[in-house]
Image (tube, rainbow, N blue to C red):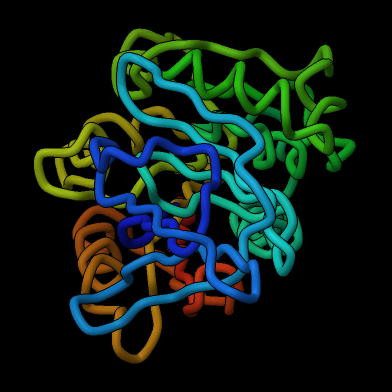
Length: 271
């Protein structure tokens, strides 16, 4: 998940005012007392809504983390200034990511999540009674701990005996594991060239890592970025076309996520 770059406008939100955190900016509180969250989605397109306050923020070895309290969307999680999920509508993203593959599989028992540090994907997977084990592999322990602390709706998932939390690079973890999985889920940031997740969206990764790690009747699903009429060419079409080179049965699907201000895409494959 993730879209443009963050700016905080019109008010002291608790973030530094020296402009040294990405593209953030804080100005004086306006007459109406409102503070606005603003995110640049495109060069000529911004998305903004009122901000109540900054609940917490942190820094890991990999990224900046922040949790905002917003009037419209409730608690909003940001990674490197990019919207990851919002309390009021994250269920749309995570239900679309998890339930289609689990409902399509005849008897899903084991599931591997690449990323998913906030715990919401695991929460949805654990709703299925057939699931015996969910392995959630995220590279950033600080993000996982931050989400454990603040995202109370996922406490039950994090405390489940069926959840096995692994802090590691997902590619390395899958390579080193001897077992296979019924479902593999990609809950990762978009594939920005040079970014940490880019290698997890390549043809080589799908062919040499994902495919061999799926059981018979196995299913792989990944988030695939913005999929609107203006934004689908950014990553959605590219991910779909890359996956089609490796798997025979490929299903793209979309849903509107209000806090992302766009239609979002996922791609699912069945062996």
